[in-house]
Length: 249
Figure 1 (cartoon, rainbow, N blue to C red):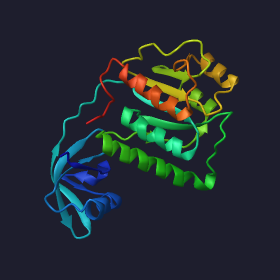
Figure 2: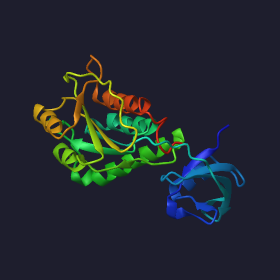
Figure 3: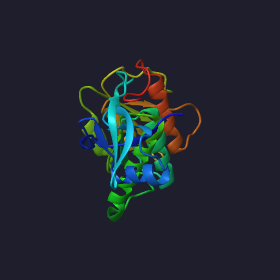
Figure 4: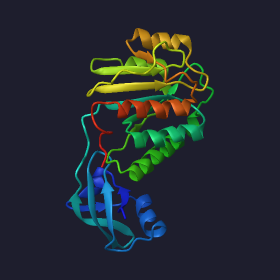
């Protein structure tokens, strides 16, 4: 049986001891009902993982006798998924599965044909939920790194900010002339962009193309936005010369 895993921010790990955040401590004590001396693992979201044993100190839960776990991360490029906003449950599926498949960063995009918007008063709550979904997915799939989750930004701003030396951009468009077949770069930074259910506006495709992004389609069928996003990350990661997603444990 594999050990239970818990996320502890780097500042909570020092001198061979990890102090679990309140939500993780509650889960250990009251949901999983683990006892002192139970063997568990913790990870800091930045590529480091540890094994240790549970210790209760009043209301605090600590993991002591920490031993570093080996990292099996490769040299795969840093992978950002720019995902146009879609319905909440489908967006959450993309975050969960994208984390499992090895995305390093998620940037929600506001495109011309987006039918979904996040109201300002709900934005911080929504981001916290997205971060929680990513954290739980990383725990489940035994990653040692946590993907970053950004606030929604305009597609045009995303292209402008990311187009720079050392970056390669790919935009998935159902009407593109070329199917995906190129091997991605082994190192560097890569951006994958997937549009909303209504697809990309031609002006957005033109903007990406003029910025040097590669425009591809995913096969000959029309995919739902969430399916296209998950498929794009999977195709990219598992056709990469580097083996497996970075920061996996």
